Image (spheres, rainbow, N blue to C red):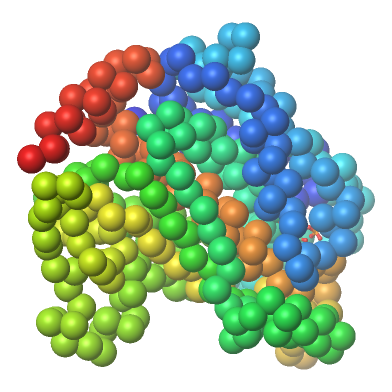
Length: 347
Ligand code: EPS
């Protein structure tokens, strides 16, 4: 089974990702991982931390001469801003962040003990792990891309930039929507049999796990919820040349919890970043008196970065179900299984 774990605090020494279950025989080029890490750092509206860090991965295990050997792959990303023991206590929890719930949960009297791990910086490790999953999927011509659809309700590049500038000037923040499209997924990944193996459920969980994501949409779910069935369902056709095909993809490539061979489309709805430069109403956790929420260095907007993290999470989920279906210990074995299955589909 493919699984991963991350460790690391935002201002700790490093972030670590451990990916287990990758088959043997895949060539991993660290520069492909670094490209993805760089993409996560970009996007209009990112904060000063992104100018400090130049995220680069070091692979600590799982490879010999750049090729996977089937053992866990550990990735290390060092933090330039390694200052965790010198940073001040945070006494005024930020509404929307993990601060308050974390203080209550662990019995801390300092939100720093919560926010260091809850910070979206953790997603750098996920992107490292996802980059390796992307390399596996590329072997089978599966590609994953993301784009920003809206930010603060704005759609065009110009109006998005204006919105972010405006929010930054007024010391505020913005959220938005990103979309992920996955091409080349064969039909039949996931399951119609068990709730916890449905592909759409796994995708929703993976996207929802990204910090600040409060909603997930598969295909045109929101629009379709107010339409008739006859207007929504993707009718099925067949031709000698194309085989089985559809003219629409409202289902976002998933029917009955399984991929149906169409592009998989998912959207993540991100709330505005919860660190505001003019803190919202909060309390001092020692005195319980009203006090403005703490301000930490942060982004005005990170929707584009969340899209890159979304790609990584999708790469992991698709790799997981892909290996469940075609699983084997080596890429050769998986190739055989995949080829046989795809050949059998040609009816
Ligand atoms: C982030 C690193 C953080 C924040 C941001 C994302 O670094 P710092 O706190 O040192 O500025 O910029 O974190 C959050 C938005 C958050 O809510 O914690 C990163 O690497 O993505």
